[in-house]
Image (cartoon, rainbow, N blue to C red; front, top):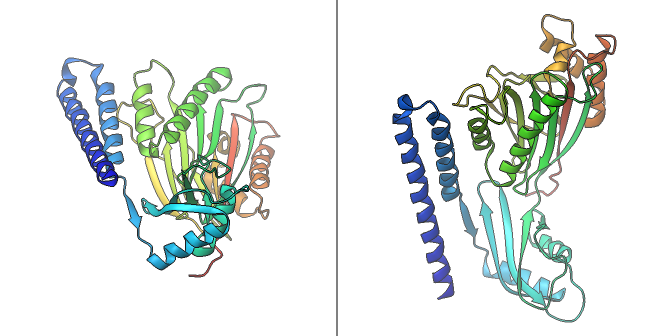
Length: 376
C-alpha cells in the first residue's frame, strides 16, 4: 500500500510539473506576440522559455530500476550481514545514460562500528564497476534503519592546472575562472573575461562565475545556464559591458567534452602528437536578448588535455595566425602535469612580448585519464 501511494504521489507531482512547464511556455508565446508593444518584454519572454525548458527537463529525466537476480541480491545482503549490517531492502537505479546508483535501507546487526566506506568495499565485490558512498550519507551506520546511497565511480579522472598573468601594472585581473566537480559525475571549467581590465572587469566576470556555479549546482544543464544568465544580463541592469564566456563540461562516465563558447578564444585539445582547435564565432554574453553560442561535442581519450585560454594569451603572440602559433607551442610541450603545461604555455606567450602581458592572461588545462581497470 505504501509503495502504491509513493508511485501515485510521484505521478501526481510529475503531472503538475508538466502543466506548469506548459503554462510558462504559453505565457512566453503570449509575451512574444506583445513584443511590438513593449521593449522590455523580450527579456521576460526568454526567462519564461528557460523555466519551461528546466521543468520539462525535470519531467523527462530518465531514472530506471535495474532488477538484480534473486541470487545476486541475496549474495549482497548476506555479504553485508557478515560485516555487521542488516539490509531491509536494496535497489539499483540507472540515472540517465551514464551512471548507476545503489540505494539500501540498513542498520547495524550487532554492536560495533561499521562505516559507509566499509559497505562500499563489500558492495564492490559483487559488481563489475566500483561504487562510493554519497557525500549525503552518514559516515557511520546507526542501529536505526536509514537509507544509504552508493554512486558508481566515474571511469575518467580529470586533473586541472592553471596559470595566469595580469595586464602590466594591473593588480586585479579582469579574467575569472572556476573548476567545479558536480555530483552527477561531470566536471565544469568556466573561463570568463570581463571587458577591459582591472577591478571593474574582475567584479563583472566574478558575478557571471558565481551565477554559473549556482545554476549548475541547482541542476541546470550548461545550455539552460547560459540562456538564463544571458536573459538576466541582456537588459544591462546588472552588467553594462558584454562578457566573454568559455565553458567546458566533461562527463567523467562517458569521456565526452561539451564545449560552449560566447565570444571566447579558441580551445585546444592535445592528444599525443597533434592538437585540435575548437573555434568560436559568436558574440559575448549580454549583447543580444536571444543567446547564440557555439557548441562542440568531442570524445576524449586517456591522456588527452583540454586547454582553455583567454584572448590575452593569443594577443601576446606577434603572428598573423596566432592560433596556429599556439598550436605549435602546445605540440612541443612534453610535460604531462596539467599545472606545468599551463605554466609553460603562459611562459612561452610572455616571452614573445618581453615578459609583458598586453592583456590579462589565463590558461586552464584539464588532463583526462582513464582509470578503468576491470575487464567485462
